[in-house]
Length: 383
Ligand SMILES: [Zn+2]
Image (tube, rainbow, N blue to C red):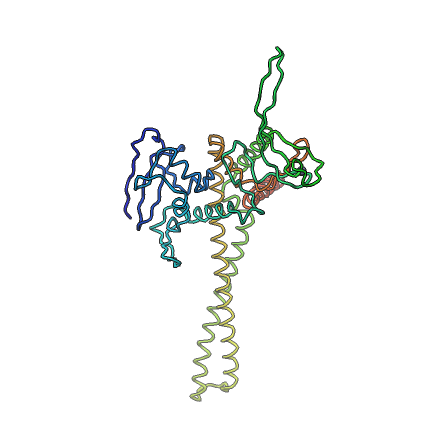
């Protein structure tokens, strides 16, 4: 792997110095000094701050960062970079893809897959099902994932200026951003709800909910979450596998000794008739097959459970990291984090909310709750 460093001379882009990693003719860029002080690849910007190819191209061009030919960035180039599976160590030649090479991996494969899923969700075909923010440039925490609890329509953002008359008679113009029910404002569907909800009030409530989620997750460890229900099942599975292996070994041994017996019978040295022995042999052969089938079945189930556990741990750790950066992050990043954690917010009159979490977060929160419950049970018993 060849590495080349590409430092910007333009003082305007000091914090955005970028490193240029060149691999097999493809380009991957990363920001050496990101606001968090870490290396961030283009793909990080896509996942954590919701930058799409257009915004990333704008960002680079606005900051005077040029591609290696010294030209401005084109969104198609960025798009190709963001979709290149070499990020996770897979070489591509036309329609053919290689197996992943671990030593070529630039980022964790699951991170790449997440970026692809995100970009896919943002494309128009997915419009109907979209719950991730399409455009993160606004100042709001929610977008695309907030709905009216009265008619079920989407809430969209509107800005208007409102004039306030002050005590001394002068007028003060204030900008007001609100989430409004699209159906109600467009008279598309009958809606008996409130037309709009002040952005900062709703956002503050949501930020509060996110903090509650973070607090819960901080008090737990990934082992605790996976521990409770999964570990019990894993222990059972290990036991089953051990038994199946023992049965298989036993069947194999019996099969071998019976074969020896059959040989003796053929030679006229056995007390047992050959046809009886053959029948027994068939029976045991079937047992050998059955038990080895059972062993391979249990082994693959154990493997898939192990993989799932590793995936959950990684997911848990990712969310734990977000809880640390959330408060210090810009609104774009906060919005993405919010989008990962919250699937859908439904608002009713007077800011009555119902929040649907994304499946993984839901799983973790349930895991923590059941853990807390079982702990309190133990305490009660101990008294
Ligand atoms: Zn409505």
